[in-house]
Image 1 (cartoon, rainbow, N blue to C red):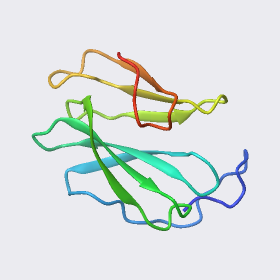
Image 2: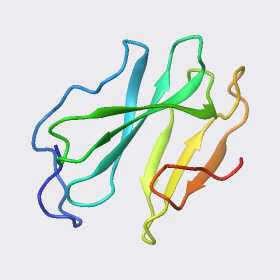
Image 3: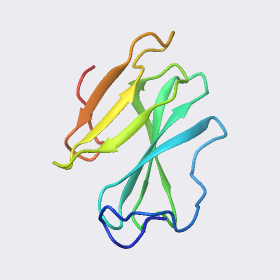
Image 4: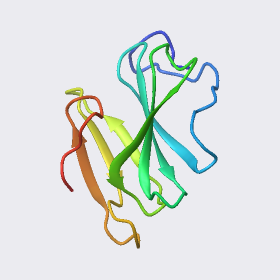
Length: 116
């Protein structure tokens, strides 16, 4: 759950279960506004794609948004929101090895991502 203020004083208020399978882990979460948020998760399954979940109620509940087209070899990811509102995702966009780190940018709240 996100704090009610959308400023530098964001703090953890509670915890909520993320949707998906046991193969979805280590969510990287960003607040899109005071109520909506996006979580991107690594996937330990055979799919080898980054998964996404969204919230529209400040993190009280989460809905699985699905598996993205972004490949990931079960490696950790990082996600942050830039001052212009765009999102920056650090990941290994490949299905094998972890030797290629890339930054992908989304200007539409995670619906699409730039090419690595």
